[in-house]
Amino acid sequence: MIRRAVEFSTLLLAAVFTLNVFLAALTNVPTHPTDSDDVVFRTVLNLQKPQALMSYEQELELIRSVQALVLRKR
Image 1 (cartoon, rainbow, N blue to C red):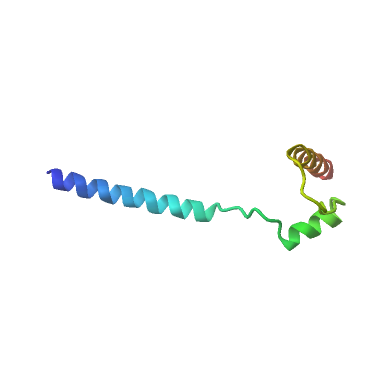
Image 2: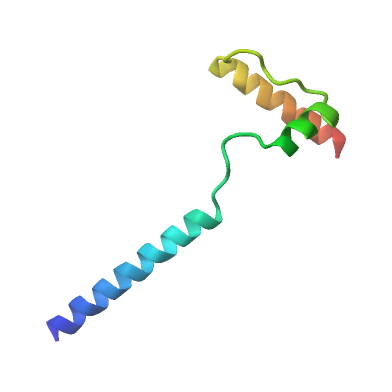
């Protein structure tokens, strides 16, 4: 009886782990802009790539401005 419970628990743990890895791979979002992202930024949104590292506040301001531009384009 206990052996069955341990086997079931092990099987369940393996299934949950496998599902978790599959979902992580499925929903993986790249952190670097692609070439198509760069084209959209330049042509549609009229944005240029920052030339230097930005501070956290500057990044937030850039995100807000991009959000505003996207909402205006809809």
